[in-house]
Length: 365
Image 1 (cartoon, rainbow, N blue to C red):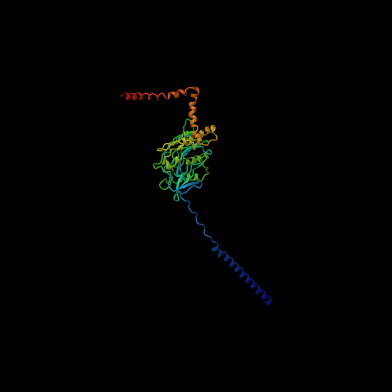
Image 2: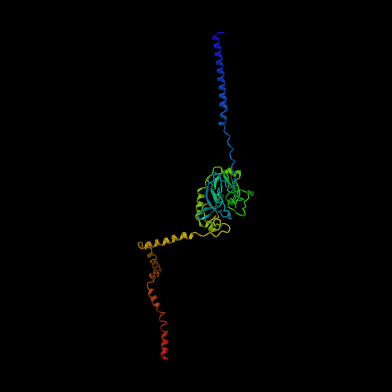
């Protein structure tokens, strides 16, 4: 073989070796790039989500608003009778204790018109949370939610509502637990399986020392449904109750004289029911009538003496009024004053002659 052939053969061998080395290096680099990044890119799987909190009275519903809180529990529920339903379609809202600057005030139970057809009322309730007592506001909704397990009576036995149901766009009343005049309201039924007993201790809050109820699955579902706030009539009812000093627990000792009303904010007249053992309802009408009576007198004085101050008219009209009563007789009989003057001295001379004979007797002696 010539030198040129040998050179070509050796060159071919070298090129093959270089290609083999390059291929091995490429394979080695690929393996390295695949194996080395794995520990850096690897991320452990996320931990499982925490379990949902267990149901308890300290867990408030997302759609329930907390109105106010207090450091002491509300008084026990008063015992009272339910007034009859005044209007067809109205629904019962039980009474409860509200808290204001003066302490606890009783909000009387009352019948109200629902905001729309098909909704039910979930009463508010007091719950012990974080060392204080918080009031969870009531609301309207398609189903009755959790109201602390408090037995408000009249269909609200602690769970759900047994006082009636919606049927065909009309509300039908269960006369076994609500007071309805069947001669006026005909859409009624009787379901005696609903327990309407009131708890012995009559506690009015949820928490230690009170009711230890927890929301049921159905109540939790109802709590997450769309809700409607109390109607303007209900709001006015609460405001009027907070303005009435007789509804303060400090004044009535937990036995309000206005425990329930037939209509919202109607705290007098027919349909007002007092609690058992409540003091008599104090009249409030006399103070309201005294200002008009006092205001009528200045109007009469202004006609006679408009420029005089307040004090002269108070004394001046008394004399004219007295004279005015005697002037008609004097005008009718002008001669009457003269006999009156003569009649006055007649009794005087009678005692005068009596002493004269006594003096004469003395002289004779």
